[in-house]
Image (tube, rainbow, N blue to C red; front, side):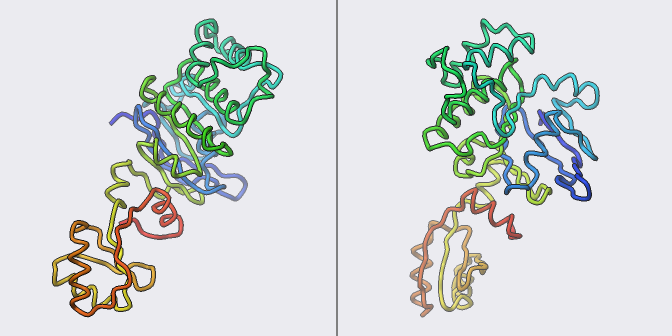
Length: 305
């Protein structure tokens, strides 16, 4: 598999504190990578290092398979939106984009209309200052600025933070369109895991500067997915009954609960067998584990078997 971004033992130390510790992450071509973690976990620090805005204390990273001086020449193929968009508030969206195009030696006559169309700002008054834009409009303009020069990798730090549902939907549609129509890879961090779950092809979970896990959307489904949850006052008796049915089950951390990861189509048979065996059955139901459930379990020290 070809990677747009690959880091090896990437580390950043401030004073005596390691903000990022030995991170090894892999972003495949033409995929959206969701970087998940709480505030202060190291997400922004990683993004700043791979964007060339901060130097690693230790470790290295490759862009498009290149390191060192060759990688430096490829940084122009990385579009970046970290924290808030750096806009000229008294200038319009068109003028902000024109300035960026001129700075990068890009033909703004062709580029500006295409980018405005891409992010849904084509109909905005060309005389309207960007300082009067809504938060969603500023974020969309920030993404357009990051796309100047047609980068192959887009780095977005919390692009939907603070947006209303309509604004979130608009950004989500833009990201999917860029991946499908432009074929670019996107590294995105977000606290809104429900939305990230709708667009990401792969994920990395980071906590206290350490990358806990990397997995694809398909692996997430296999690791979590659906399971049958059984609540009973006598879990040991319930496990015995299920064992006689050749249905593997395990105790959950939650008190008096059992998890059955397979045999979902036998839920009614399980309930009938437990009741017939005299097991005090309080609840039995199908549960779907979300990305948020999986993430919270990991960052609280839980397992992801």
